[in-house]
Image (cartoon, rainbow over all chains, first blue to last red; front, side, top):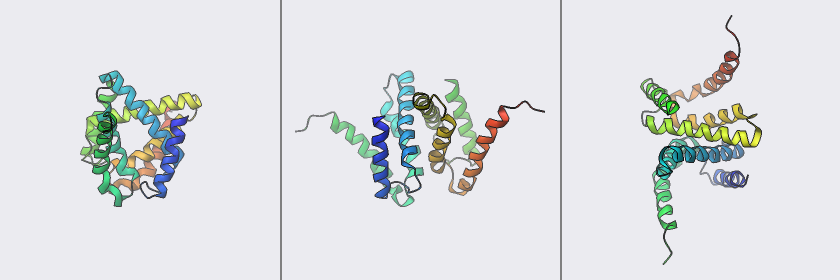
Length: 96
Length: 96
């Protein structure tokens, strides 16, 4: 399960850097995030042919982030959401 | 989508009763919870033939509840988790 392993390593790094709460268990969190995304994608495919996938993933993070980030980092949530949207746009363009 | 509609109605009730944060959008939350459970069940089926499903659903709530419940209700999280485990046992027995 490559995605879960990769997410687990990133989760451990994020805890070390104070971006995620130290109470989070990296294996459990990684398995849940990959599972939740899998489900969000499935429901988006069934209900909207994936046309609302980006919005549904954003809604997932809006619900998850406040419970997994230290309170002192909550001010960054709006910036993180904006960065995700920007990353998608940049990824669709050819670098100059 | 009967499950999403039912979850949406319960979410609205829970917000009215102060069990969930008023900032939560019932349609978005309901769609995410049903999608996330769908994904958790899928991954549990693939990796463990659903043998760890109850534990994985508990891990889902441990990650979700702190971000969706008002801080004054966080003291109830342990009780809620215990009630889920008890409900499963009761549901398997015939009432006296």
